[in-house]
View 1 (cartoon, rainbow, N blue to C red):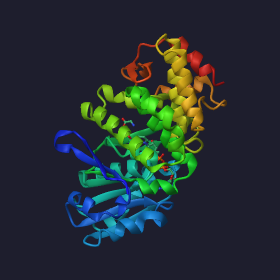
View 2 (view 1 turned 120 degrees about the horizontal axis):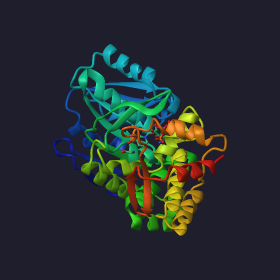
View 3 (view 1 turned 180 degrees about the vertical axis):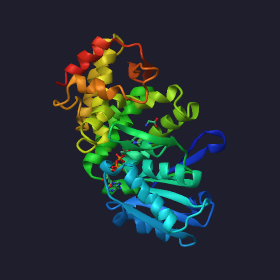
View 4 (view 1 turned 90 degrees about the vertical axis):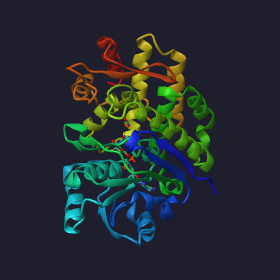
Length: 361
Ligand code: NAD
Ligand code: GLY
């Protein structure tokens, strides 16, 4: 059995641990210090509930535990579904000391976190991520949100969990496409801030695709270390945290264009990261060789390296104009100076951006 890896997201009084290891859903002693009252609501969905809900509930016999099983899918990440969580909390008379547990991928994590931020002006919550993407990214850092038909994650709050418990055995039931989508976010950390990790990924990508448990645990830990370091410096994205959004301005535009139902988030941002790398190259920053290395790694993961052909450059520009990084009317993009060095800049050539967007038409 793998050891439990523990990291800290260092945010002063809002600091919290991330535990990574096997069988952690059935480790109530890990959970208990982070449940401060007597009531718990486990929020999950119809796919995850039959697999893991009983494991979590069994360990919580000392509490008043309720659960809510939401429909599965990004298309349900909206205010209507959020309201169902509030309905359950109110019907079951949960008070301000209740703790919400998000058992699932990024969709469940983002919605549960936002529900916790809002319910009675804020109650505690715990992240129990069950997808690779959620274990390396969405469960860490306190971004919570739902989508609006006009923009991805447009309604939300920064709200940190009490802890993150990433049980790596849950990844065994994840389908291959979801695993690869999670790898897109793992590769992101190499691209934005960790050259050594990018090289490690080039050497070990096959092991990750085969779900080698040691390689996966290492990649999750290293990804969380990178994310925790950035979040600790800039919790509310006043500056440096925006580098975690490499490829996301392009990717969110793709997801909104598809009404959140076609490509997975990880797939959309994989294409987006390649587009960001291509623009960075046209700007004279990243070498052609590094763009090729980036494309090769995503291709080995069977991830898209270009936007959908049906998406015009005009559509891209319209959707990108509502990105959360737009400041005083100027679009800012995360671009690469080199592999391992990302920058956030409004200082890019618009004609070169259009050139990159036209490549997908
Ligand atoms: P997801 O939550 O939709 O999960 C993917 C699919 O896998 C779902 O069908 C889910 O039911 C299923 N699933 C989950 N765990 C499983 C398991 N162990 N076994 C079998 N099936 C399982 O998608 P995701 O990729 O985890 O997350 C994407 C979401 O995360 C997006 O909404 C994105 O905006 C958000 N996100 C948020 C942040 C953040 O910082 N908050 C960062 C990145 C992404
Ligand atoms: N996933 C981007 C962030 O957490 O800032």
